[in-house]
Image 1 (spheres, rainbow, N blue to C red):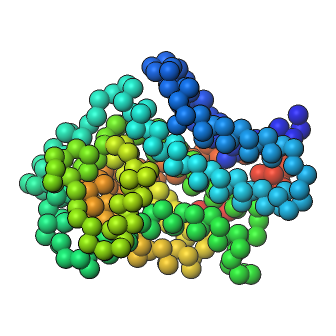
Image 2: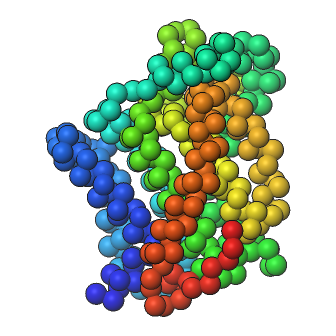
Image 3: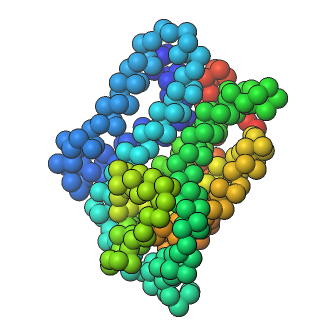
Length: 307
């Protein structure tokens, strides 16, 4: 029992709560999906991993279990993201016509179409695709690099790293819930061909298109988690590792514009991502303080750095 209690870090609490929420939603509206492989695979991986965590006596793993938890949680996000494409069809209708209408009202045209038409040269296109691809790498690099940063710059207290991981991963799950409440496919799925696509003019474009073919789905447009997560990450890094913060700034700026350029988002999605980021962060800070109940500082940590 003590091992199970020790396992219930704030990170695993929020993962379990998200699973309970999505399982309840599916049970109510489409129970047959509970037996679908896309639903079962990530949950089985979680159960096998937690069973290993409970039984292993490996000193090496026990030393790195917080990092292992963080990396596994991040890698599983892809499953839960694509799952929202199914979940956001259960309750509400897609709001893409409304989002495209707001963009039209604001600009008199569709920026997700005009942007790539006006700036269509191959160099600028590659720069935009490079900025978009950085979204997949920045959080993972931060999760792995921060604990191993050279002396004087690394996070020395487990509490700081645990808090950083929780606020980052829980932000993803918060946005996934928002995708269910505000279902939107995005310009690349809403516009009619050929306006829903942008030609690949270089290796970065082909790389992004390959990633999209593997893991993209008609979901997650509003609000933009690309923008929201990136600015939450920057906010956390400013307190924890300013060097990495400054390294990420140019990539984040490119990402901001690239989401519209490659037709992943409407401009209103980007604005909603910017506005939602501090709200999502504040909500998860509140949840973290409530969940950080464990009496052993080595498990959760009791020293909270300011962010």
